[in-house]
Length: 204
Image (tube, rainbow, N blue to C red; front, side, top):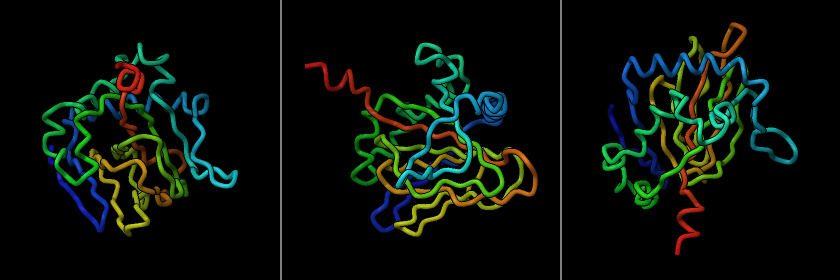
């Protein structure tokens, strides 16, 4: 695992390359392919602007197929992504700019697996969390599908097994995918990282 601290203009973000070991990545891709059979039944609403959906593609929240928080350990994706909450992980990024100073205090997340095929995209939007961590997964060869921060003219190629961590309030988009077959070719895992509000703010 290789962590790179990035700053573009006023945007601080983190690249984590080779996040998962080869055997871990294989298990994750197996689960992603298994989840495809449920995606039509659990496909969540996307961000909306003026009544228009900003996403063309599919997605599924891990919590929806595990029956809620109590069943999360049945998901390989959930279990393996717990490394983002380890001291080994955050010790290198907590001093990266102002926002990342709170990273080690965050203790909760909600996870979505997104699927993209030919001409699928996600227009500029923000997320409802403190940080968003997007991990790229390749299901087949494709072009496009970059993660872009349009306000900063920063474009990140979707290299498999690379995670991008950034403040959720920063507008971001998935550029259109180019794929000459039917089906999904690009997948991503997005962890929306936050506080357990009921614990942080109800305890006095």
